[in-house]
Length: 130
Image (cartoon, helix red, strand yellow):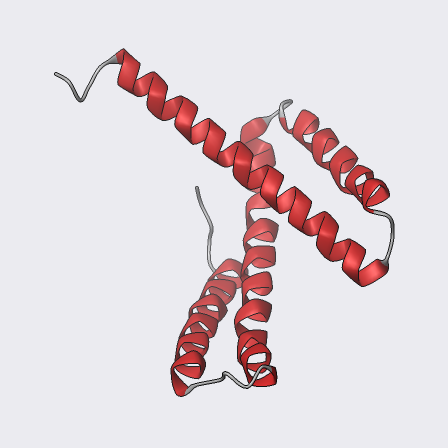
């Protein structure tokens, strides 16, 4: 049919790869800008400091991808949930400093914070799997 076949599978695969690549590049650039704002280290130097280990670990992961994924999954989830806890915890402060804090902001931030806290708890104390 029109909604199946090799062409559609290739289009979906390419679209997924482009999407993930775009996300990685966006996070890479955002992290370099954040670190520059905090440390005032030149951006080009930060790009190298971030990029070289990233590429090296990617190369190492090709030796045994399943084992690598198994070993980095828990730390990755913990880092993800911690970073999101910070974002949701600081959001009401950010809104308050701009004089725009509402009860809805607090409720949504508290709900999001609670979900991330639950995820962090699960990442620490329960089995993780892909």
